[in-house]
Image (cartoon, rainbow, N blue to C red):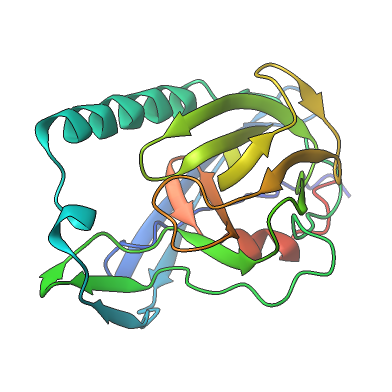
Length: 224
């Protein structure tokens, strides 16, 4: 009948404390009528694994110059999240950004390095040979091609509506900032740049700033 249907994508950050959270939504239907609604969600404990590592101190303790660089690069990314394109650019389902990829791993793993808690791992890692093509998980616009301290050579895609995917530790980028890419298009090659112990792809995602498991995007069929 006359009921309007609105589909929402809600991102829950991997460090969100378990418990209730209220989601409020505002939209406008095809006739220009305002729609509002709210729903209480319950965040469950994901019980992420804990990884304990012992490494050489210079590998994890940053000097002043490195710390300044890391903070500068974080500010660049924060500006990108704030400049999300308001229109949806992706179409249909998302895909794993590698052909013949094995299972991804590592999202949310909490690392204790030399006895000190560190930030959780914010992406899913896929083992792959150096030079393997990295493919766009869906259509979007390249919002960053950079060389970052931790992430190495990096590509960030803006899929619109506050949804981004990130591709880290690359050997090289095959795209430029501002370029539109299609789902499955080769955007980079697998490498081991930045702080990486070997060649692999770190695939990450953000939804309205929340750090989410990119593999959850594979469950999106379409919003049409």
